[in-house]
Length: 111
Length: 114
Image (tube, rainbow over all chains, first blue to last red; front, side):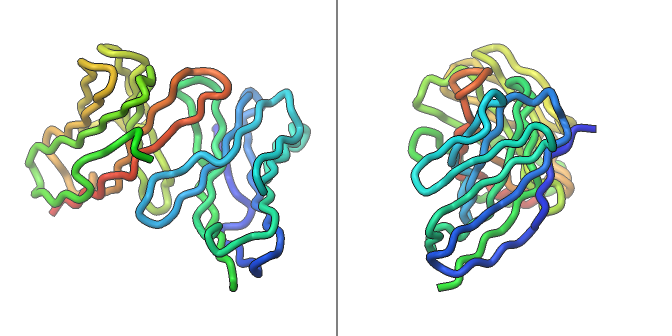
């Protein structure tokens, strides 16, 4: 069935290093992908999105890469800061009623 | 984000009681959603609404009722709460159903059913 999963459930990085969070998806019909950040006690917060007709999209310190050939999505965070510590979710959207979230990966930044 | 607010933030109720979780958004977004978040299951869609007076079931609708008489409000009611409904509930909204319309979430309601 449809699924969105993450390769690494936890990730620890040194402050200042770059972080890479990976995500695999199985629905080749998905055409829109989103990354969310969730801090403790808060709702998921939109970070960046990408459409299926793109391979790469950059935001402020974040880059999302999409490889449709292998159904893989990644989020890169440059110069990781302590404030980046959170759980990160990838999500795929095929229609307004079909937003499938991955299980999440926890990013821990070591000062 | 002050655009979408949920109340209460915390709620403890007993099995069998009816409880309503409130959601209010100030963006005039057409689409609104209710998710529950549980360890091991991630975020699962309960109900969604494309506009006022239009609602539809999501992945896990059993035991829940929604209504949407006004665009800005989307309350979720547990008609007879069960322990399995102990969870964190998130309301979300988006302006559109297609590209470039990510969900914007509230800060959640932590519900405990005893």
